[in-house]
Length: 310
Image 1 (cartoon, rainbow, N blue to C red):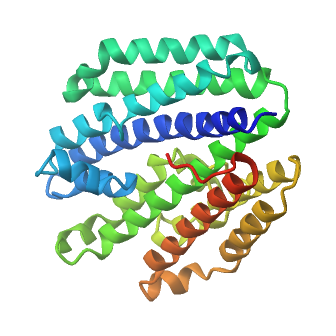
Image 2: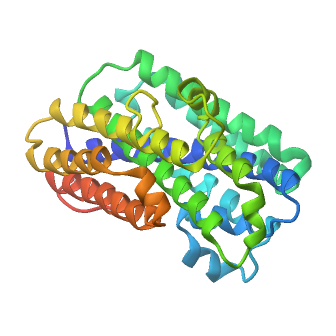
Image 3: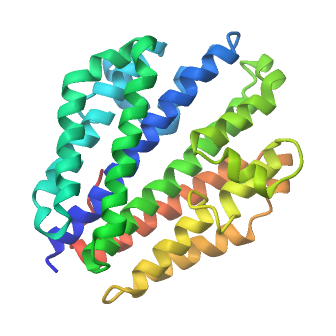
């Protein structure tokens, strides 16, 4: 397989996962605003989760609802629309190796957003459009993961999906933790259970969490579940296991495998109760994100010949 094809499939997987995750984040936090009218920094936390603070500040001075939603939906570099555009371009140049239905579906999503994206700037039309985006992404994943041959292209796409998923899970957990530790907004402590529930719902993890944990929702169990559960698809440990398996099916995987094995050891060995009680969870998640970046750099060096960026 050509390295450029492998790279395009990798980034296609990442962008599709990013589109769905961002749509879910906006939808869940729009509902959270209705439950927590006294909490003023919910919208700014979305910018923190996505890591686009610098890009946002170049366009907007105020992190209010309209500006944040406009940025995350329409920005030329950091939005759902930009991710759809890039995913579509990667699919266009590799469409001979994926099911025809997948190429048709990403085209339909792109055209649908071009026509209807302004509707989501207001709350009235936002939920419907975001639900449609998620549905498009899930249908597309259904075509790819049930109809595409399990070959090298498939594995690079799978790696991209899981690396993006692990990164987003760690970011959502991190910002949930920082919100509760934020001394500037002490009133948020009153809503601790609602905020941890919001973390789970942002990852579509609430029902699966309830099946695993009988106790009331609390930060310790939520963090343990999202970091270390090896059976839940969006838990960091599960994503790393999938990446490890995909690496073993590719040629010359030694350096990438070392990177992902190191990340797995870090996750398995972490003491979540201690990290929370000592307020060190934020620092630990920074290390996890650095490990995920290291995995990306190793696979880029091994198979793409240079370190690319999203």
